[in-house]
Length: 139
Image 1 (cartoon, helix red, strand yellow):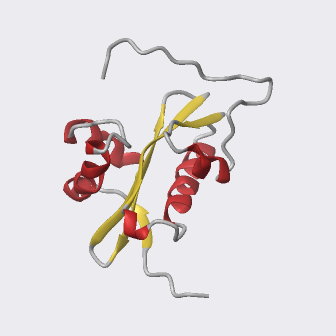
Image 2: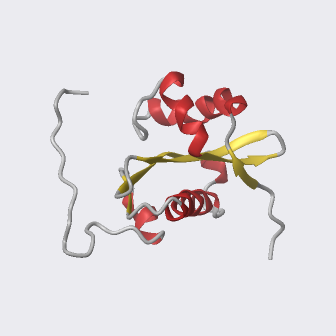
């Protein structure tokens, strides 16, 4: 087994600049929803960062809407750090927060769903519940 070279911890307000640097290229590539620092800042309270040394290499947050629904937001891992279990651990930490808060369902929206399926997410919930969307403006 290889030595683990990263650690996960709860995000803090001091992580905002580093998280924005991490998210920036993914937002530019339209792989993540565009968000300002003002929109990301509130997510730090329920977010986690993956760090190596003092460098933030991953981030995800769980936004709890109600006792019925929460959403994983801003899941990102630097490309050179992917395929090392970081994204999976970020997702697991977010789901654990939802469990602890007794949230019934957690959703995640992604353009690349294979990863989320491998983490246990599915396209429908028991009883065949499905999320449907309508776009109210062009992007």
